Image (cartoon, rainbow, N blue to C red; front, side, top):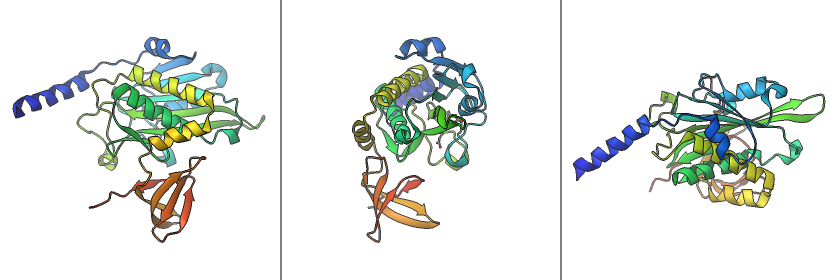
Length: 278
Ligand code: BTN
């Protein structure tokens, strides 16, 4: 029994490694409900950089830019995003918003809900959202989202929005750089096909963005939240706080009660979840 179980595991790992889900514009465009220009690079510095630095007239907005590998993948707050070849989905959804900038406060939350739900729909794995917009499976980060806006200073409007999404799809031996080795993981499901996952993310994002239903998106965000009722640590004005997360409000802010019983509403920043030791 033990012998056959380990054989099964080895076979599953080999299947994951040998999977050839080659990124395909044709497959993705057939699965996407709305018309998008799709650009796929085998290797690029960063799909978000490409989206930012290319003129709108050359991009044919709306566009999805995808890479099989990124040499300078970027994360939030100046961090890098590890983007090795063949094993991840690195994509930027680029569009010009009709909404005003003050109506876009739930954009990142909408993206997080769409990516989380797309992973659940395509893998059946219990993906969760760690505030604000990291996706976790079993307490490890498998996806990050970097939303950027390019402003037109002449018109005062947002010229284009870039939703950069990086999903670690296959990394069965957890080969990550040392600084993220303890916190990062990958989907590692033989069912995951990057073309399918990409199309599902785009379709859900389009749906939720155009519905523009604040209550629905916040309800879903709360449903997938990894942090409600969890003990967390955060830093404010160079001071460290420990708190329990009580709620996520209608603006997507985190309502917490600090250990000294004071209440705080967090609008942005990084939090760490503190495991409860029994
Ligand atoms: C984070 O974890 O802080 C966000 C990571 C975002 C990574 C994606 S991969 C596609 C796009 N291009 C980039 O350079 N970054 C985003």
